[in-house]
Length: 233
Image 1 (spheres, rainbow, N blue to C red):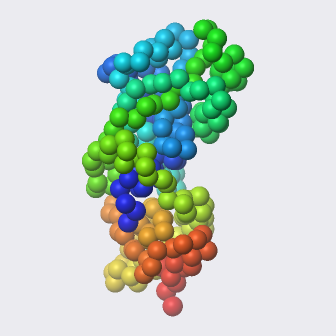
Image 2: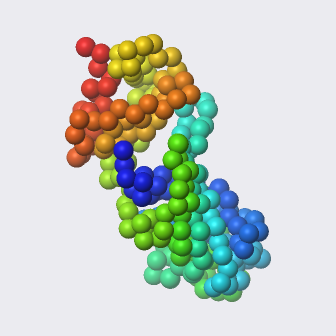
Image 3: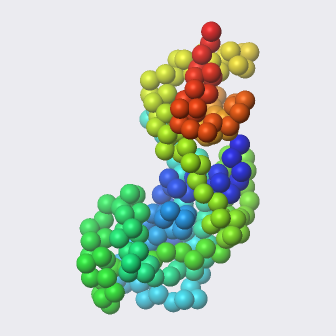
C-alpha cells in the first residue's frame, strides 16, 4: 500500500474542491490543487476571501471520486486547513491552469488579464497548516511538512488510464481472476485503486487488496502485474 502521505497526495492530485469555509462560515468554492498539493482558489469580488485577511482560518474540502458504471463513489475526503495567501503574479498562469482542470470559469481570464486590480477576481492558495483525511477505512491528520513533503504516486496517470480501460472493457476477466484468487464466487467486481504496490478491487461492498510480488517501477511493469490478476490460466 502507498505510504499514507503519498496516498493522500495522490488523492488530492485528482480531487475537486467541494467546500470552502472561512473562519467557520461557508463561502463559494471553486478551484483546484497545484503541483505541491496546495488548494488554489478562484475568488470573485464581493466574496469573503476577496478582501484577504492574513489571519483568516480557511478550510478547503477536497473530494476524490470513482465512477463505477453509472454510479459515482467517494474514494477519499480531504480537508486542508490553513491560511489563504495571494498567488504571486509569476505563478498566476500555472495556478489558473490548476483551477481550469476542474472548473471552466471565464473569470480565470479576467483574473490573469487584470491581475492585482482591486475589482478583479483573485487567485489565492492555501498556506497549509494540517490535513485531515478519510480514505477507505483509514483516517487521521497529517502535518504540513508530511503532506507537502510527499508526492503523488509517479504511476498515477498510467494507473488511472489502465483502471478506466479495465472497468469499461475487461470486467469479465477481472471477475474471473478475482474469483480464482479468492477461491469463491465474486459478483459485482470493479477495479477500485491501482498503484505501484498493488491493486484494490471492489467486490460487492467490500474492498480487497492484491499486492504485487515486487513494486512496479514503470507503467509497463504495472500493466504486466495487473495481467497476472486478470489471467485465470
